[in-house]
Length: 260
Image (cartoon, rainbow, N blue to C red; front, side, top):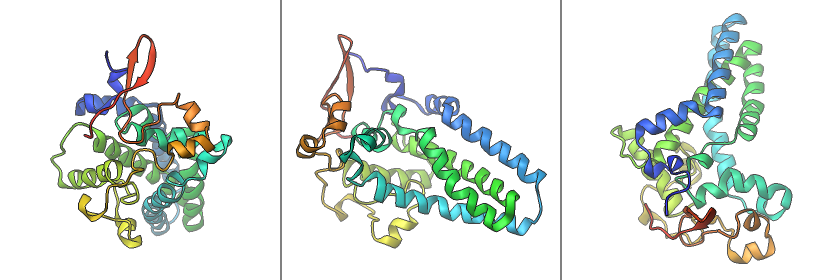
């Protein structure tokens, strides 16, 4: 048996493969295009440099804080899988990623959910601080932060040991979130808010192994009561291990693998 779409499995990709896939992914192309457009508009509408810098500074703080809140209280919540209307979104934006952390296709945020969220928060803040030039400057900078966040997230799941201490440290923390205890280390590139709110743990021994680290609480018992995610997954929910998809006579089935 061969891996289904193995070119999308980060544990089978090189750093060069990732760079190519990253910069040709439609969402990243969109972020870059929007960022360049915002840069041009911020120059065209330039008014007050201090207010523009303040707008960029606020975006730098709001982005990791917003990610922390959404990751902890929305993506890891248990209310989204309880209705058929929200189950599809929750499955796509986070459940599948914890089920198969190395699948590049589901690691990237979906553009139709990510972009409106970022723009809806950052643009008004920028406008309140610096008018229209502040709004586009803040949004443009948020696109830069988004690309940085997405790339670091990919590296964290790539079968690759970074040479930079920063990347090595955040990779260790994020893999603990995926393979040891999901109820902590919610940051991706910034763990300030984890430290502030008491969800940071530096090493696995600081917290017990979570029985829901792969299914995020969507257990067999929960699936019996709220079956929509299970049906969408074809009954391949993995509770005790990350899921891996294999191709067998044209059908997808799950195979047990060890932890990375």
